[in-house]
Image (cartoon, rainbow, N blue to C red; front, top):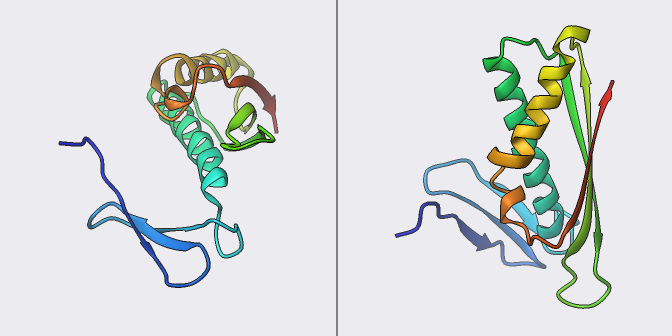
Length: 136
């Protein structure tokens, strides 16, 4: 039996789907990227959301205040099918972090990258990844 399961339903027009886990919130996925994020955009959103959640959780548990966090995720795709991501660059912009807590923020990013982010660790190992942490 699977650990997680989602169900997508085609909305009957274009490449629009809606779905989620049973009894949970639903999201839109649009293969054309017109009425919602495309599947490839969803992957970037999932990666950013996974690492961002890890960082917020780790900082909270470390009792290091984090005032703001934005995650920018940019991907380059192969020119031929299956047009997978070959390179992904992530920029994390944090605000409201005291100077003495900055090393905790760097450690939180490292822990997410090396251990916790299951989306990141589900990608092919040959995807070139870069990470940058900035003050906002």
